Length: 162
Image (cartoon, rainbow, N blue to C red):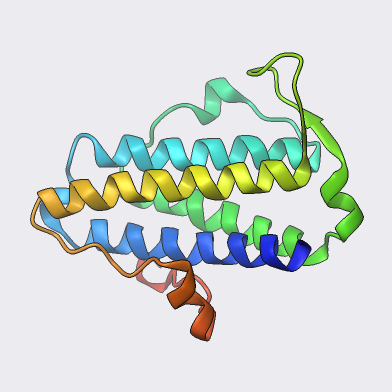
């Protein structure tokens, strides 16, 4: 189970970087009023669950502010994914069974494994939403399929944001 979840996290980072680049490279999408808030929502949720899994504080009032630029959103992704990839490489199978609670769903506990799956599935769904919007604006969504990623397992490419 751990190896699969590690792959899902690695794929998520790669797919998110590809989508952000595709949005940035398409003028209408880069300035679309809907896409940046959706992309921010994805990384906001990712950062929230990642904080819960690591047991570190999360400041929703600060984190919820949508950045003014796509570059700032991409920087949140890059920093979060770098920390997440380092963390996921170190955890053990037993860590997946530890339970966490969220104040947003009172009375419900989730295992770390379930939280990782939530983050990956949520990100996947919102990437699809952004890809649809990108296509409506005349852009071409990048390849983001897990099975295609498995062939070479490329790391996320953040060079275009440097």
